[in-house]
Amino acid sequence: MTVSASSPTSLPSHHAPGGGFRNPWPSAQLHGFRDFLKWTLVERRQNPRPADPDPSSFPLARPDFVAPRATPDVVTLTWIGHSSFLLQLAGLNILLDPMWSERASPVQFAGPRRWVPPGVALDRLPPIDIVALSHDHYDHLDARTIRKLTSGYPAAQWLVPLGLGEFLRHRGARDIVERDWWERASVLGLDVTCVPAQHFSGRTLGRRNRTLWCGWTFQGRDQRVFFAGDTALHPEFTAIAERLGPFDLAILPIGAYEPRWFMGAVHMNPEDSINAVAQIKRAQNGRRLVVSAGHWGTFKLTDEPMDEPPVRMRQGWKKAGHASADLWILKHGETRSLAD
Image (cartoon, rainbow, N blue to C red; front, side):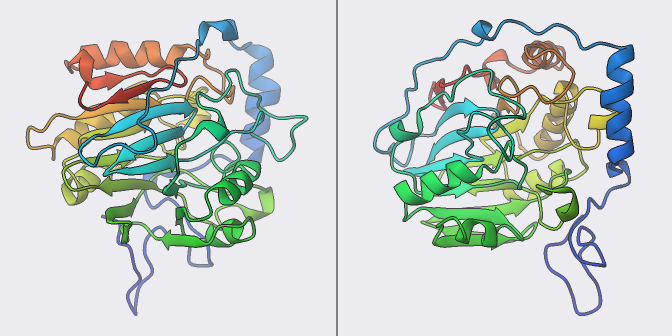
């Protein structure tokens, strides 16, 4: 099990000896730039990508979150798109991996472009109390969005993994909680914990893995929520549930997974997500677990068809024998409540 802080004689296994961070598991060997070129320049010519549906097949839903805030006993989740969610928990409004720009890119004239507009307009958000970030990739950490949020919600508390505090301070964030894996904090009465994920970081080639990547857990008075962030399947899902669950809601990624030989070390496919659910349920003690799918249907990042992830997720979910009502495949902008 991964530890959260170094002892006088040892470094946590996810801290690289020369500085920066790494995935500590044998299955987490990342592919380099040469393999990226093999995928994009060779394999795509030999095996063209399957056709995608028309973007009109992703209709927007009308958000139904509680404004300005839900009561402490109510939990709602609204999908903005990709890994961006508005979570209402313990009477607080929490943004997860907020990304409102047109492109997931350092520039807005190139790079992956939105297929679907954000499910909630940025200026239609309720008052934001907490913003939680999983890592620094452009589809999860968007500088334009950050500046707008720090300007519009200057009192918001920011939850980030190690190394991201400076980026936020330069863009106007005031109250920043920076944590390592397994480190906890109390934020506005909410118990939050930074938890392991299998991924990588870096907004430029020269900054790879200088900052940490993570998931987050949130514990209110009566409900607990797990946001897995951007991750491949890793061995710590049961440990997360044992230490910080049982959970009422888990938000797991299901997209951006093909070709598997290249993406398997950094992204879960639907079958991996269902495997993660099985790990989490080992510590649920019979408590109902609702799973909401994220990281799909917004940006074309990999080779699977844009509408494939939810189809495979529903098929695998049914095969695993889980109740259909416990899987949330939200439309962009859709809100659901644990009371539904």
